[in-house]
Length: 284
Image (cartoon, rainbow, N blue to C red; front, side):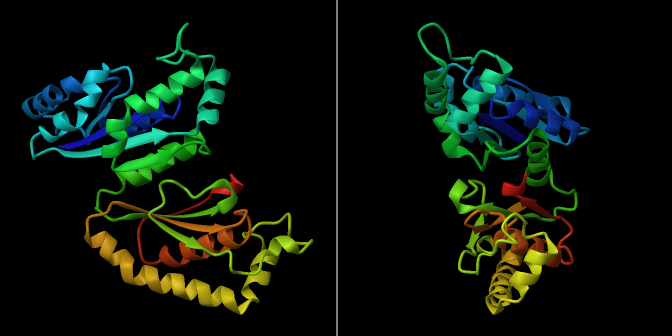
């Protein structure tokens, strides 16, 4: 049985992730007490959930804190027939505060004696046992609902053939490295189109920027080096039963060089793998 455990701080997108898995054919339960996890697994095995793709449960800070402390013990006690995967969603504190302000919803831990900012920090502490055990951590600070649903589909559901899903993601170092990146390539050594007035407002997807970068000999050399590395090691990752892989390509602002190379890598590997995607974080 495939069991997906979704957790994370309130406002990070847990409901969106659970709804996506429900749409993909999973039997879903929200706010399951941790202590009931073994009983759920036993019931699924006894009742026969074979017509479902798997079981997905959301476990969050509404659980009793003692139950959360026992999370790893409870998880290890599950039968060997359970193939479990833990997804932890999070976002930066200012983003979470903004989301609660916009929706005007009450944080589950906040109250007269605990303001919102303190509740968000307390929630992080309570969920630490799950954070440590997580197989996949996604930072949703800069994701739309649709991007999060796509990420869940690519990283958790994948393809029934068992092929590995590969995401090439461009980003800007000035806004931080993507927390879910498996491989990171720094391309800031290439000449920067930002310093050319006519190219500054364009992106690595525009013909003029592509032409400029392709005129630089370092660009082809760097692309060949990255491709050589991936050609050698992607098959090894796939052989180790990896269902997903995020390859992050970074430059200073995430607008020109990284966008160009991520697009070129996406185009190249589409011919070799059935599930290859591209995302330009700073262009969203």
